[in-house]
Image 1 (spheres, rainbow, N blue to C red):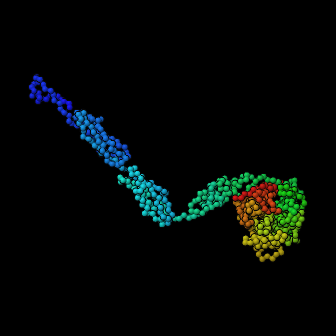
Image 2: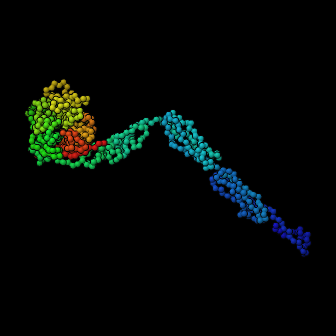
Image 3: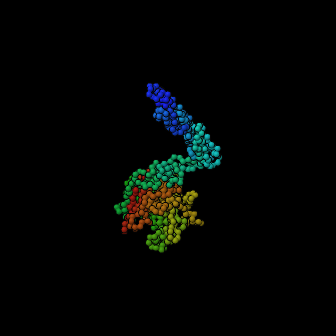
Length: 624
């Protein structure tokens, strides 16, 4: 206790005027405690999770003055992670030991954060009409309560899986502090059952399918709808986007880039050179090449003119042109005899000794008085038929087996009329013997309707007996029962019933030059001259068939200048294509394999002569 000495007037008065001895001063005790004043809010309200921030206090004492720096604050009870009320105490004492009254601040931690809801599964959720609604669920978390998933209230009462439509499912939850989560909505679409459709494979995504399909409601991997593709078939390598029906083919690389089933596999080769190989100036290759193996094992190749010669050798790769004329034309002036200018159009032999030949017979009206108003070569006075000739001496010579016109195989059902040609049945394809035992050929039918244009097409015929010229029957769109007639000698009620109709005109037009069976492809092959379906390209075309009746759309084999499309009259043109396989084991080369050659005639159009060469170019086939 400290003492204060006070000069009090009362004491002075009691003790005299101070001139005598003075008593000692008396000390006054300090009993007044300091006062604590809180600063800031009380109560102090803080969101759960926020750090506690001390707001502070001040302390003043009547003797010591400012004791703020001596305040002892106890906030140890505060837990910021839990919502609750907590007390923070403030204490201080002065230098006399007087303790201030404890100041208390109430700290309230409030949970103000609502829980959050997260949907599980799809949103929107799709359900097929009639299926049972399956709740996909949700999870809820809270900053204080933690996992509130089990407390979620789900309302899917609006969903009606029996009716097509869009419905809402709501999800709600509340934490222990009464905070409501924002409601979450899942859209549930009830749809009609999916309809299975056809999907087309296009793994390489080049827009062309290889033709493989799957029928399913949902898209299989690597498959597309028809509307998404350029074509639903035709891709022969669905693993390579550079291979498809519109790709540019590279010749002789062993890859069929354009998927047409073939490619030219090498350069042109000369088979017959008119300049060096001809026997006379009229010795020219003037119809498609035909070949057979004779009784001595020698290959004979004929590309006929009206005086017929042949080339002979051990195989098609080694031939020598023989100047012996094996058949001459009879030049009969009567069109009813079908025995005028004659070309060997096709040959077939079973034994190499007896060779049957279909003769392309041209009646040249301009060459016979009274049959044409023009005295020079013109198609207006050209009347054509097919007849039979036979060699019984292994191809050394050919004769008609019966007197004309009994040798007639096929003709128009109408007789010759001056100046109305060209008209009739023209050059045959090569002959193919089918597994059914019949011999098949395709004939070129030409008919000129008045007044100017003429029609031409390919018609299919077969015979069980090559020795009988009257045994040939044509396909009449129902059966092989169409009967060719002689319009001069047969009684005819309706000539049109004896006119062989076109086969698959849209796809092959009038292609007739070469018919073979490809053992590698297991298909019949037709090669001929023509124009592309779009009318833009001329040349040699190829088509494939399973039955010789229905054919694939003709595809360009070789783009060539043809005799009727050359703008420059001196420009060489090509004609008479024929497919032959030197490796064929068939006696008549009517079967080919994976490779072969296209033989053809090149008209060099040299001024003043008939310069025509025979060439060949190799071709390779592909199975897709």
